[in-house]
Image 1 (cartoon, one colour):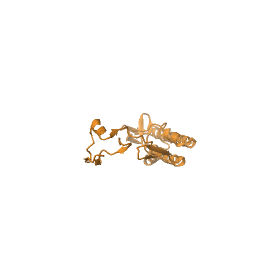
Image 2 (cartoon, rainbow, N blue to C red):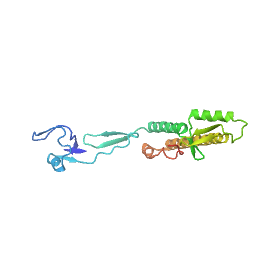
Image 3 (cartoon, rainbow, N blue to C red):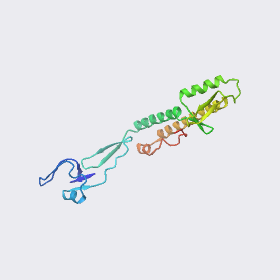
Image 4 (cartoon, rainbow, N blue to C red):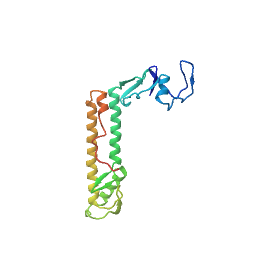
Amino acid sequence: MYIRNGIPFNVDAPFTDADGTQYPSGHFRGADAESLVAVGITEVADPVYKDDRFYFNQQSADGVIVSIAKPLEGVVADISTRINAHRDSLRFNGGIKVGGNWFRSDAIATAEYNTLLLLSAGQADTMVLRAGWRAMNGVKVDMTPALVKQILLAGFAKVAEIDDVSEGHKEALGAAADVDELAAYDWQAGWPEVFV
């Protein structure tokens, strides 16, 4: 950021100095420090803005940034919405890991697993219901009643784990004393593994 006479200066705008000398747009872009200082322009570090998810930031004419915390309830509601979206994404798109392979966890796949389980009622757990079922990681497996049960059980366990993490994060949000605490809190930590 550039400063002239204590206020921010746009080096890309046309400029007329105190002697009436006119400089075209962009004249000072890339100029060396000596040329800038000769007309009273200095380069300083850019101002630091706080994260606008948590704070209103306003820059005064002299370049000072004033950050005001947003209302706590609104920030909690916003983060809760993000947690819910992340939770749902993990539940329905994250996959289920069984025996080193990843299986889909979306509603269609879950319906297919349940259908296979119903069709296999009374059959041996080793009976191949469908050969060459492609897992998310590209491996082809033989879908058996035993594997279908493992996928469904792992899916239920994963949903419970995801919901527990989600609720834990929401409890932490509710316990936050102020927006600064929320800004420091990492709600994206602690979630179960997903297929990438």
